[in-house]
Image (cartoon, rainbow, N blue to C red; front, side):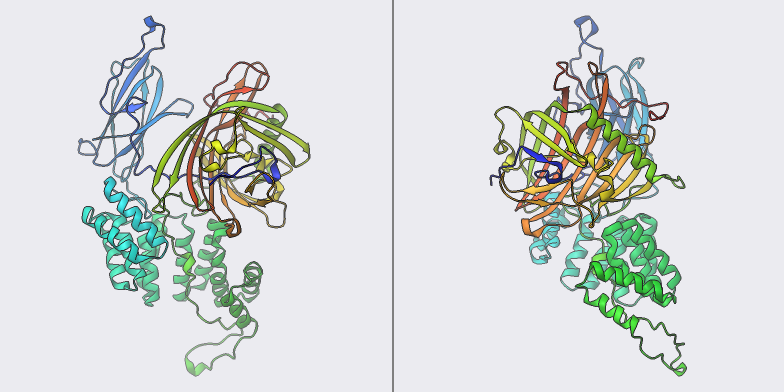
Length: 639
């Protein structure tokens, strides 16, 4: 399929797209031999006498509590003093080697399923040897989620499980059966395999077998969130409320930021005649889940009504129905609230009130934890990333100062160039990446604000470039200007909330959630099929991390507010990491994209792309500038 995309466009109709990444931390691929970290190999390093910088090999051994190599694959990162990840790879037999790295100071960070994260400082200047041993402690929290088992799957078993997962996501259990059988023969005790077997039997209407496989899942991984929630919902359907409450409370303990767990707990508490506690849990679920949790509102209304708060229950239902006019159950619930039935007599053993409860309805099945995509990462609103407890956040101040940084960016830049590297993968119907392609572009960006809130943006890739040079003829646009969401003329178009103080590469950063307001113009992104075709506005929601000392935006992650079936757009997920670039001749420093992960499902094409940028130059400057390590600022530059 070939699509031509306009070269010059306005920010309020940015031509196409951006999307995101399936985390491969658990099933991480080993680096290509000879290109960074390796396992047990020694390279030829430059010597200062030969005119090169001093180079060393760092040999990392990761051990468990018994002193033996850990029995799972670990992700090992080599981190510079200012927090930049310089190299990363996975262990083989508990060992990994970083070859030919500069003799400098580093932090070696290790992450492995079932273990607490570990790190160790390493001084390459003074180290007598490059052998580093890192001892890991078993995690007290365990692993959560269907995609985070405590042990890894062999590639063949992982492929079969991926095929089964995609079939179950399409509600085609017959297509999943053979793949599940093969995966189960190869890994009968694996939590993810057993969990999906339970989903298979649920879709086959055999709930008893489904529960037996979820029980087995929890034997191997007691913190498996999907299994805990599935068990609690199954027990609710059987009216076994105390048993359901036991499982869902374990789910909340396993993942306190799961809005789905709090929503199901609210339903359990309401059935257990605890309306006050049910209201608290439903409110918390709505707070955590943002717009994704709106289906909790009818449940909240029932809890409010049961607790005697008819006025708020009516308001919650009216607001919900206004946005979801086709929900007949909620409309019937409101009608029942407005026209209550006569109170039952006291002889029935029930004390009547004028706020008679609405007819009981089962919890919305969309509250259930969905099956994770085999290729898309979790939705940005699936759960809130952790923040420091009890730290107050001044949202208006954070947004204002971040907006000033964006204004500085526009003021200092009219155009810049860079070298862009593109890694492209097509995702097949089973959610498995195939047909990898690579591209390299001479990339030029020009930005002009021609009137408040409207920006002319041009992106070129080489003198002889055409959209057809991109795989599939689909071009990625808008990476450098995504941060314009926080420009003062655009920020009001988004509903924003500050979730707290998080960490970004070890530095404090304010975590801000944003969502396109339906009553405001969409000035950020649109899709176009061709140069002269009409554009289709795309509303975004997401999260930004803003460094607390400088208010620079260092990371952004976005998703669609809603899919666009009319243009067959079903996924568009983006993560962009920014880094500082200092241009000496102009004596300016700007935060520009360092790398980006892009996932999209558009017109039958499912794609994963990774973009990285280097060799930045201002248009009039002939000296190439590389992305620097972030600098720690000692004071607020605005003061």
